[in-house]
Length: 127
Image 1 (cartoon, one colour):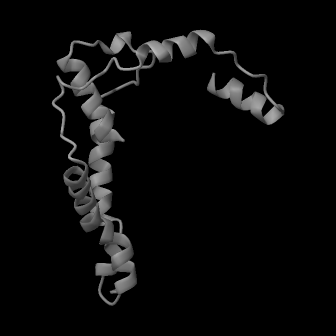
Image 2 (cartoon, one colour):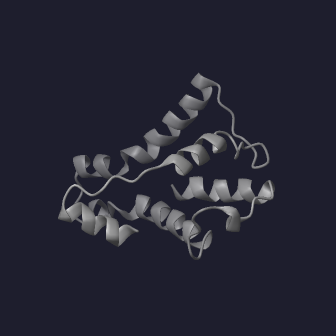
């Protein structure tokens, strides 16, 4: 998700779309996205470190912790080759597709009243 946000911000920058024109703007972005991406990358490799401690080797634990590190790139490249998708440059990304439909939906949106007290509290908390 962080990588997707970083690429989105690169596309906005390349096409001259200001963050201030977006409806929501996260604080300390894109720096927190880079921090999250780095943290996820590090945790990918150290999440199963206990399997490497003396006397703790366990094949199922190793496979559970580290199999996806090898499988994900294979699936990603396989998808790219099979579906013949291409990696878009930041200047080629279509940031305006379906914007009119989204704005139309937003204009016509009618919020439903909360079903119960719990939903009412959630609405108050997140609004």
